[in-house]
Image (cartoon, rainbow, N blue to C red; front, side, top):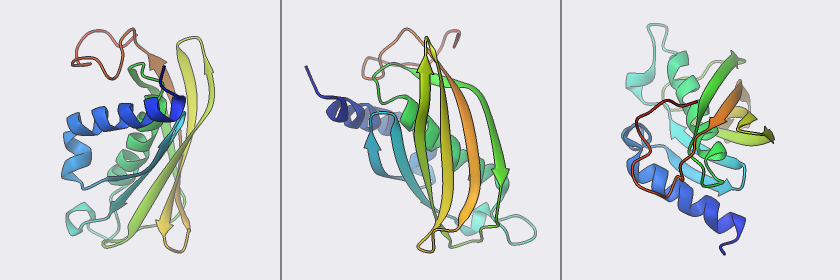
Length: 151
């Protein structure tokens, strides 16, 4: 049987191949491992609001994507059941951001994950995100995981 790190890598590759949003926004998987993920994204000019700041929706999206990759590293399709974000600092067009997701606990079919979004290279925290997950009865590396009731 594959070790956990290899399973996590295969899951991330499978997900990224199907993840049109991450591809369109040029997200990069920097690190992946059991229960953890680190994604990087540059804030494009099309991602800023009328004040020249990165739109909070894109910051949430980056954090949510890192959350998704982290909670799907165990080869069980896992979806968001809840999520919240606190915006700590502003980001601007051209900023490179990294979202680091870490599994805090898995219990039954549920889990809790924390994600910190930082600006690269200074490491300033831009946002903190917490997500709750729910696992489905399907493997990440099998077929198309779309459709059906997520519970």
